[in-house]
Image 1: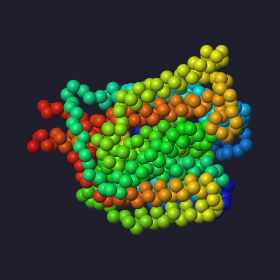
Image 2: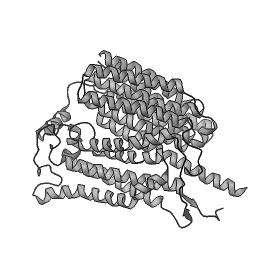
Image 3: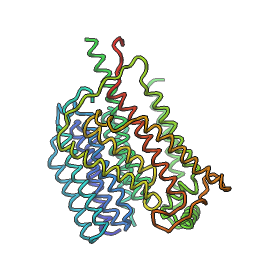
Image 4: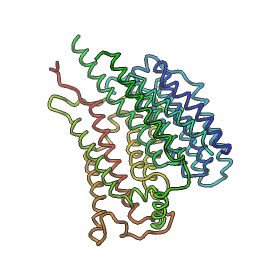
Length: 150
Length: 87
Length: 247
């Protein structure tokens, strides 16, 4: 049980636990923000686990989550555009906190790994994660005009 | 060993699965199922099964919510059409 | 039966099931441990065929016939869905309209779409080396294509997605898997035996014999099947509506 695994345990337990509570209770605007945050918090957790277990192959999991997590939130943003337009979510603080957490984890891991192909992969994952997170939040709070057909 | 990590992720899976059953509205269920998918992928990763975790991420993050939400969208559109004609 | 009686029956049945489950769990062998008879043999067979990813070796080499069954399950379910969701005589197909989408979302979708498709192809190609393989990469590639619907609108997706082509691709890939297996029969060994191609160098792209080929076939099959499936769902949700004259 090294420091990486410990940090991952705490980060996942607190982060994903909070999103499970947020997605199961409350109004729709809180639920979609919680779903968005679940992938934004799980991805740095996967990066920490990859370092903690000593298996660089697990970085592929983080890459796919960084690509497909925001796409999942875009599904809800597009197909719930009418409901969300009536009551848009305002979650800038939570979004920026999750983005900051992701950035810190990626930078620490880059510093530990040193220059090379793995560091390039980490930077790509970090860019996709933070960019996707911010764009998905933007899409939730009014990115799609309420549409007739979908 | 990694027991605390496995226990934490197992609890997350149990909590989100219970929430998926307790929530009744299909739209809310789709949201909870997306979070359950992420929790399951984490569980498979900490149990050292990354192939299965990758499959879970691939299917459960976009494909399943998209299929569910498209079905809900279709049903709502038909109900809106019926209400419009009845008026 | 009133509701109270039903709840009592449920509680009794649940209590019995819980007691049996607890008794069974207390009798299980310990978690983890060092005795893995099947795992040792599977990993040894995988390494002797120079396949770095033991899971890929089990899926596409040692138990390739089971994977053929799984692929036919996916194929059959997509065929069934296409039949169920087809446009019937009393439905008409409206034209999808262009949507108004915020600029950051559009730009994000257009930038990430090629990255995601490439990642899917990367996962398929490296199936015999790192976690992943045909199924995972195929689903990622198909989903990446639909970023065009999520980030723009359905009309944009329809322009780049000729559904007929994907249906043909699905059938072709499924046949390719079977043909690769039959090639082994024609060469004199068993169906889907991994003895035709050289095993190559460990931990490089050209390793594992027929595992990369079967990986590619499954990847193409799953990607095309997922695109066809989503196409039918999208048509029903976005385009098709009942003719006037419905009750």
